[in-house]
Length: 471
Image (cartoon, rainbow, N blue to C red; front, side, top):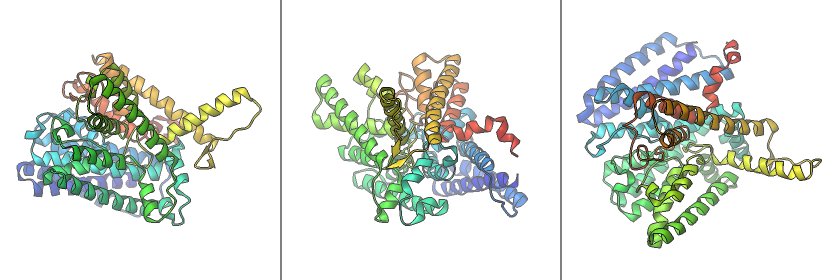
């Protein structure tokens, strides 16, 4: 399959280009990044020359295979300069997959003393993954009919301009919006007191909802109220569908049920937790509201920044944050997780099921954005939830077999598959990191991040015998 080789070669060349840029900008790690640039550039260039020919139209199965392999390969390519720097192969792979999938879990500590070239590479991995998975989802996930991008296209199809139904045009428009928001975020951060380097890297990891910071204290390093509120705003913008912004520039209708659902959910949780925090700890209203808003939005949008250890707020708060991990942002955003659109479909399906118990002969159609949701999509949503829970259970069991305690294993599996970052517990909670875990646990979690970011079915379909018979 020359097209498979060509696609992976193109990804190698893309990564080599950014490695070369990093080598030029940061002398302290120039050797490592230049070596990685030469290796990937030479291999990618050779593969392009060997496989270059007219590219045939892709079948659905080929598209799934290419998508799964290029993102798997990208995680390995991204690990190369990290390995050449000073960390073990397993840690380099974990950090790379965490960055590329915008999970934000890290095995690094002493970030304040880490070379700027490494910190920038981590931020670039998240920036590339953030926009890359939006376009991947727009192109591929409708075929899986799991209520993700398939309904997202339906939501976006009422625009007069067909920007959102053409993948190349959508990708270009998304990239422009993405870069514009990153530039705006970086400018706001800089005006708020961040240095130039911190402003750039944190803008890249905020809009990508990735959450890699340059400090062990995460965003809590910046004690500025202005910066924390600004981060709240831009994390939220990263968790909203980019098609929403594109339609706004085209003066299209801004109706979006998933946006309304997400905002209402956030308002309810933030308001309730802020009141609870004020009453239980005596915090000032603004401090409680800002702290809760920051950490709740960070978890729900799967950014993973933290300003403090919210597990210290008590068992009630810890339980709330555990369930928030699974919510996710909007479909068509840089956020991971289950996604707001699927929760809407699930709740409406449950409501219809209860109503039909009372009136068995009544026909009730499930609607989203005023349109009837096809039965196969509803079935796909149910299958997604089933596979998500099954995946969490299997991964948690595997982590427990590696020797992790129940809390760490379960929250680690959930945070990896939902691409959130910090888990629950003393080891991988917001005050810790993933460095103490054994190598096998780290590899399992890296695979979980990869599977979760590709919304599971894109990877799981490769394990079907019928899939391979089609070739």
